[in-house]
Image (cartoon, rainbow, N blue to C red; front, side):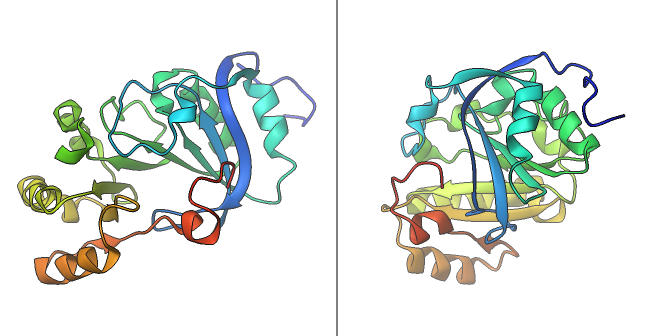
Length: 224
């Protein structure tokens, strides 16, 4: 297909909060340059949410416009995030088009919507919401059956109760033998050293992640 020819489904619309180029701050890809496509809307209200501006703010863009916008960045790693990106069904088409163009694609999802519909070429970074989030009752447990070895599960922990709850979930679902399991402290609430010591004592083959972008830039800086 020629570069200037019309892409299939290119007129489909997504509401986009922001598109920016930055350093990947989380996941096993932390530290890599990455293009972020942040979609508008979320139907969860986690107690520690740091992207409330994505609940409603944004503008409509066609998939063609989105693809054109990201071409200006010298990068092939793309993360789809939000908000909750799976609320907008056209994101499934966007991910397919990105994969077809040989981008390395990741999606960050809260784990309460079906992940089985995501293109298998996409790395899924799925939250399992801990009790202090206020949204743990909405975890979509059947998603665990659809995790692939290249995917990642993330627990954001704010309390000791969260940590012990997460350990039970890991053991119940044998998560560490399904994919990479990450623990992230609620920024400004859980001490990083405390989390590190807990991980060492747990005996679990899990990884700690901190939000690298909040260390490099000011914690409330947008577009980084």
